[in-house]
Image (cartoon, rainbow, N blue to C red):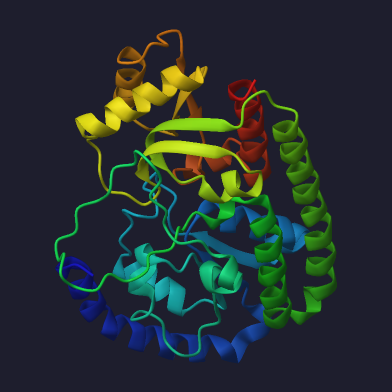
Length: 323
């Protein structure tokens, strides 16, 4: 954890103390108090909305990362930490990017880590052939296992996580438990149907390979449907410039496999993707974009963006890329 984050956590100690006291005061008027739920990322936010349904009117739901900054760059403010510790339920991813959580929570906060919930279904970061490895400052220190944090990009994971969220909502708000359970069952059926559409599409596709001139946060999705991938960087990479060797390898693969497009993630820079195309023997390839749901803003939400809607759009884009 860097110095700025350590300083933030040190300064937040007083805030946590007063937040805890404030929460005790609020408990005296529980009947008038809305259920407070705080989440870090958009998929969690949209899942809670779907599960809550009509009970959302009696819920104070807060999305912390709503300005287009992705999970890996987010640093909580003291106000964010206070909000979390005054909440009834806090949902977060639980990977390296959320390392600040452990030192920020007071004991009486009900919290859910997506990675912990998945258990052995969580995948370690993977470096595949041709991918540029990140440089580590302390090469001689034993490296900790880093998990791929983009668990929401598996529709199958989403169903498990929605069920876990529902269980905690039922515990925190028993009067709406039947509603939460029914809404979760209905939503999980929609997730299951979309999963089946992905499976059928890939099984009938001409190709089974995608190539990314960018970070690659889609490992969970690709593993679900046995899609092979090549990419410049791992999903949580901070690298922005690819080496000549990485560029040359991806350009050669684009030529060899005659792929119709090179992918980038949403709001990405297409410079590398275009360079791969220009250095390949397949200059008719185009640059396409898959949405990893990491940069959804409050404006996108107001315009109607949903988890299911974005995953449906990704399905259509993949369909074109694999045929």
